[in-house]
Length: 280
Image 1: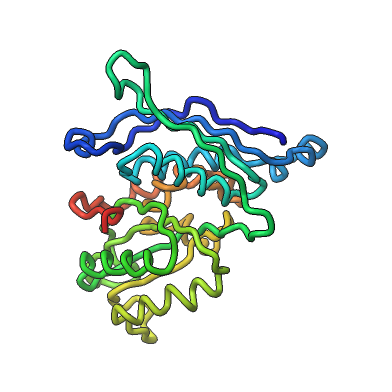
Image 2: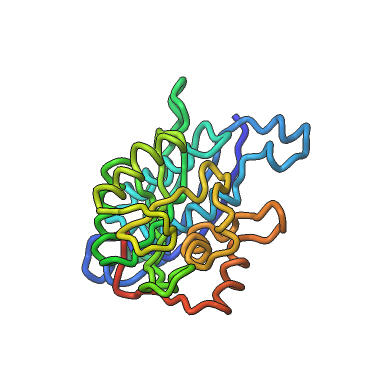
């Protein structure tokens, strides 16, 4: 089978079981081989027919920076699952190493190989915005806990505090969650997101700028942007840009990392340093 590879991707993240390893990030070396038929891309010379190794690399970086796994075995298994959710990827060989982990050895690690089960539908990936300006710390944590019960939460951005849009109400706390799910976009909204909002006391009124306990919206679903506010609003662009800075605006050609950087210049948004939703 054809192979697309990512060689020597060096990411800093938490990995290990000792107190020292849990307290500071260390280098993690990752090599990925993606198995999939690339004959169509070879004929068309079109990027949309290729396995998107850039997206795989960015998602790998975002995951490793936030996952804080205890073992390289678990981290490798997580990354293999994420690779198999990508379009065109039928199998993956992944090697995860901890350089300098053992004295006199260059590195230690594991290498695994996994394949997409025949006949099984590929899981969807989505980016969900979370926002609250009524007891935001408690409601964001609880929303993430409820999300974890319904879908696979891969990683969550930092929490950003931003001005309320369209009103002089309390400032919002906002984050973006990257998830995997078997549900389509409509079912995800109706069966997961709206019930969580209701459980946390979200009250909808004619005033769309009214304060709220929690607001959950699908920003991106299977690489398709569903909310154009992502390119215009700091409370959407800043957290999502942490996870997917490479995401392209098809109208302007700018990536989300650039958009977020420009929006931040004119924004009062600040990171909330003592609230990590990845551990919620």
